[in-house]
Image (tube, rainbow over all chains, first blue to last red; front, side, top):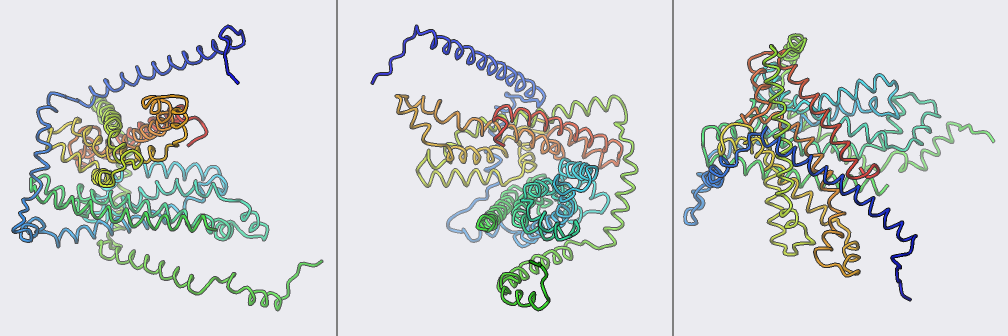
Length: 293
Length: 284
């Protein structure tokens, strides 16, 4: 069988014409999009004071800077070199532990706040539209103001130290998790809710026995993800005096203690990677627990 | 048929299905142990992090008085408002340009880190780990490093956003490429398409919407991160925010925060619209 196409067939001609028109409209849209995009890039290059000459002149300093932060490690005296590089290991590990604790306590507090508020922000459980609106705007406010801004303000209110860091992370976590949690709640199966309501249960009992069992593993998985993000966030809290390893890092960078910079950065990266890896395994275990049911 | 249950019958049912109702002892013990350990760590954290109740109470009192001082939001003078608006535009420019450049530069890394493109395990491993390393360093730290290289100003901030996004984009691209359906590529090959056709008509239509939606999402989230990059002197509105917090100009602080909130929600809205235009209404 052959599949010959007669180009002069009027039916095909009409189709071809329609196709040509549709694709030319599409092409015009794409061209306009590209033009707008290029204009945006050029405008923002001006706004961000991009200076290619300065960049070309200084780009050599980037590898030089990286190189300077690296210590001299000789094979012959590797142990001594390493211990010189990590001369402050004990203090840094202590600060790193503090960073992780700040992230943990902040995550726990923020998760608690999100759990308490998410039910009234969910469209299917929230009792009043007014309350739902207020909770949602509250979540939005909490996650849009960067945590380090909260930390800056809290440092003035609470004094230097890890406490402002913890509170800043807790507030940010409440905002970020509250949104996710309320979306999880909105996706639940409502049949158990009807069942529990039919037995004459009140609102809190419905939440406890019909909703929480459905959402718990998803909540835990999101909280773990947030913990991982918060460890990163806590590592810079020290920049504004809110505790953790960031304060030694910013000092090392500002005072040009080059090898300290690489030593502390390496510690942070390794810690973040380990926590990434651990929480990811846990999360997958939790989610597969959910799917097995 | 009546549906009443005598107490004896109820007890009988409870006894027969004890495992289903109460759960196994082992599962219960694990739950209790986990919760206890998590709580223990929490309490330990509270005690070691110098969180005394008195400190919290007095701090909250301070915060309350700050909030009173913050009202009403006020930039100080018209000239300062113009300066702030300019800084805000600078912030958006930093976020936009940094994200776009990172998106373009991450392409080769994405292909290098995709298992179905580069089969060599060592290359794959090295590419993945270096992307992880770049991503593990916060944008604020990158900003500090770039300030040392190109000097203070928004250029350093743009470079910082670009570097930290490079890691994220490389990872996302490689995942999108790995998840791409081979069948579309095979289909193009089967009608006689060359290698270039395979990529253009088989791979690109699959990968491009994913990439475009990710880029838009990142522009949005980077607007947030670039609002603070000024804290370390890398341009944008963060510099003024940190300054006015440190000099206790509370009305200015609330004005700046409102400005940031407005800008972020405007960009949220815009990029959400664009994202749906690119990927279609259904897929989210």
